Image 1 (cartoon, rainbow, N blue to C red):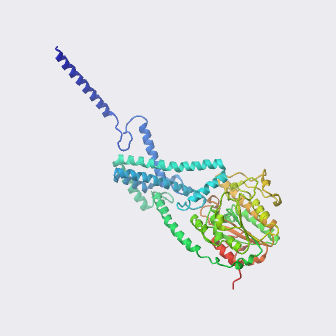
Image 2: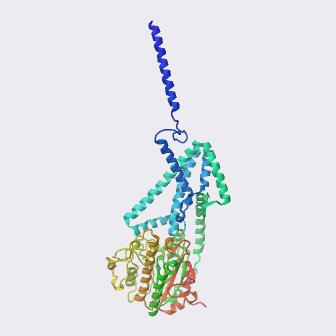
Image 3: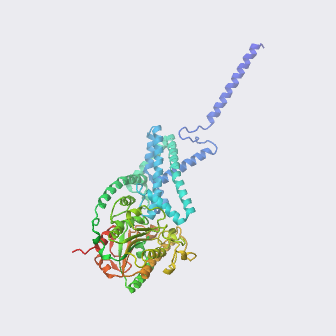
Length: 582
């Protein structure tokens, strides 16, 4: 065979080998699963763990978005049945994915995920606000309250536990937007990559949603299967912006009207000249304390016994109810409402009040010649609000001189607060004083508590060290919480009654009242905003001045006692104790 012939044969064999190799690779490639170009997941039938993991992640993303869309914003409504719903937002979302161009689709999906995450966080905040304040979170006005919530955790749980709780909340607030947006983007890829199944599924769910909406179908009573919960929530909260602006204008008009602003000093509070007037707010002392079947027997017996002892000492009292602008917390709203005669039911109104020159009760007393004092043991940092009230003296944690242990809400006992005030401001020969005193022993979490001591032994509070107290904090057990609340109210009321009995005289006039009802775990769902209010005096001419009020005799208001809005108290009080009108 010639050399040329051999080269020809070798060339043919080489080409044949290459052709066979390419054919084999093509067959192998044809048999291998092809990844889904749209969803990013391997095609069905692919081996290994990645396809399974991909499907699990997709299912989890779907569950996360479903829960976010149908979850209620009240804790007591969170049940399994609450999630058996068809969210209209999901059907609309699928439709948008199918009709929008790819570039626009991804932008809409990312924005939708971010918005859904914010609405989810809003639902969680609503749950907390509904439980404590019996109202939803206001995204315009309530952000400042989050700082107060952190302060409450620090004072109630201690630094370490509060830090862990706050860190967990911050981590969750950061994680939810990221995870939710990724979940929405993943579902968007799946829908875009499976158009025909998505169209069929969306059409079926849309038809079922319409039928359920028309028929009012409910698997769980009060929870319609056809859901638009999240869209409704977004619409309602968007409306709060306009409502806030309108309320700001309305409040400006209300605060401009003040019939006592220009009253001469010699015509203010003439019926109380020479008297020491104390306005004591008893934290969380609400109507529930004297009317709830669990609390009423013990509290009523305590008040009846106190009334009997005070009567024996020559005192008389009148009681009624005031409707607080707040519930479960936000004591400063109640304090400012009583002081200003304006309805301060949100933080925006409170801030606007502080920027005004409104005549408060204490300013009226100051104008009429009294020394005015504010005792606020809850204040443990700079308190610029004190400048608005204009008290001659403000006592806070920094200058109350307490050297004993702290109890619930990391606070000093009410008995120490009253003892300090007595030693400091009511010494013999003192100038007539008007004081607002905040009593915090009945502040949540309502335990532990001290026991009453002999007043002469109180001193700087060191007497409370090493002494037995009530049980530790009740945690989340509703029964223990309610029991702790009862004991705290008994302690605070016993302190007030004992103070009058020990230090009262002909010149003492005491107004004590609750700032608001306790949280729903104690008050129950749908409770009123009413709190008891009582005026105690030994000089009967003082009570004669309010005889037209219709208040009831004694320390406890009956169920049918008069109910005033708290903002009406200032004007009625200044009128009753001003010059007689003819």
